[in-house]
Image 1 (cartoon, rainbow, N blue to C red):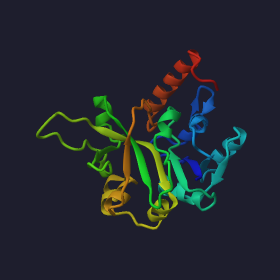
Image 2: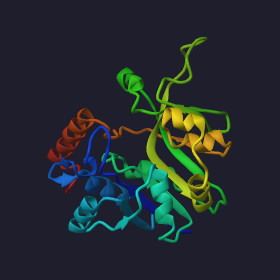
Image 3: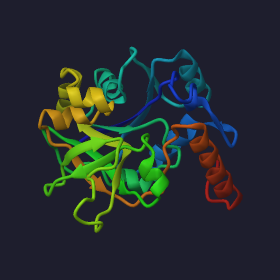
Length: 246
């Protein structure tokens, strides 16, 4: 059973253009993501996937395997494009803006046996009220079968009858079988995905199971300059303590 990890990286980010190449302690952000993914056990190959020549050139300089794909509307579509070029049974997607992702957290999503249709996404509890209100943090509601019921940029579910509830956000770490990727690539956006602009709703709208796996994670996806500054602070702090080596 072969698991291929893919790090989708888009240069033309709306809120933070060129963010995969943003400097963090002397290395581009994509370097940090790649090396965190490489540390995870159970992954056979790791590739960065992009449609940017600038990013490809940096990957070559940093000795990071890179696959040039056509322009893609979503990270999932980019992973699908890699699946057409690289043989595998499962494809792990780690977004290119997750430089703090813990390799042991990544390992939680890796399948242990063959499955025909497999789609899974990590999620973690939200502890910071500011984070809960940030629309760049995608919230998720989960059913008793641990499958996603809905994703939203707003807080869900609304705690009308009780406050004995925790909010959860999805992490940019997903895993798909080839059949699940093919479904996504050949299925048009539904109205909910169009409204919320959340890829994972394509599975929910078509009643395809998307398993949510709860993990404890202190990661921070880089969506804004504020996020980038915080990631720089955390990594510089870890380097000073000798936790990471560049």
